Picture 1 (cartoon, protein in one colour):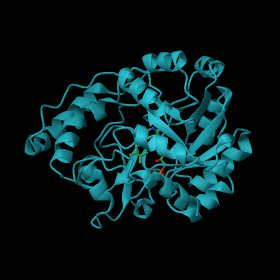
Picture 2 (cartoon, rainbow, N blue to C red; picture 1 turned 180 degrees about the vertical axis):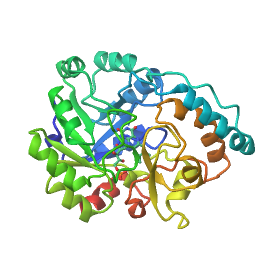
Picture 3 (cartoon, helix red, strand yellow; picture 1 turned 90 degrees about the vertical axis):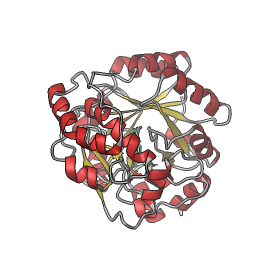
Picture 4 (cartoon, rainbow, N blue to C red; picture 1 turned 30 degrees about the vertical axis):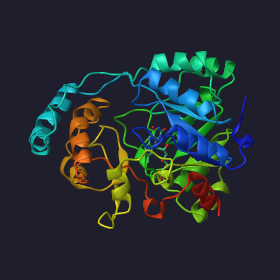
Length: 336
Ligand SMILES: Cc1cc2nc3c(=O)[nH]c(=O)nc-3n(C[C@H](O)[C@H](O)[C@H](O)COP(=O)(O)O)c2cc1C
């Protein structure tokens, strides 16, 4: 089975669902001696398998990331009330009618079966603890399994499920927090402190993630972790599929801070602070993927119109360090 210690460079290019992560980005990571992940979230099994085939033809080591579905979809009536609150904005933006929220597991089981039939070197999980039997099945197929954790308790649960390594995600991270339960409020212990605490409690290799945008930050994280996982610093990479609106926002000096909100998806996620977060952050219910479903038409309409105030602009606290260029150069810059 491959391990993180097989990497020439201890950098994981984070899976970034919704467009930024492409096979080209994952291949570029492999060519740089780092490790890239294809996001399995928000896409069909067929699309994921096509991307795996494309990536495998040029990358030796790579991984696939899956969202662990939660049994509890949250309060769907509260999501419907939120949808009613959003309707005037949807009309103003010319967005299609907002859908009724429905439970959806993102085809998790089918994706798992596909990865057991056609194994990849690494699989990482977010939004929950993979079942121990599933971890065993993946490992039996030669796949190295990682779980993303945001607190010491979740690290203990993932270790008990017999994963091979932990991705420790701090509150500085761009995109969704990986909390195991949607409704729980993610901790605010800084990444450095969190890695230190988990290291005292676990023997597993640790990958530090969140707010690592420069070689100074990466070098400091590598003193306590075995590797780092970096997302935001690659959003402007030539090979990334980041939308034009997202790219524009990341270099727009009008954005001066990031914030964590449930307004877009129902799960806490960090992005550039904009009007949508300010107006709806306090009323969005903790229900995933229902909130994600009802806000999708608004976010699509806003992105198409170049309206940066009503679209999610995921970014970690170090977003101002992100620079355009080939991913191989970004890997080298991060390592100093
Ligand atoms: C645009 C974007 C999309 C993301 N999508 C995923 C995802 O699909 N799966 C996942 O495990 N993490 C996802 N993350 C979180 C990353 O894995 C990682 O924790 C984070 O990028 C690290 O913080 P940084 O962005 O400050 O480097 C995403 C992050 C961003 C910025």
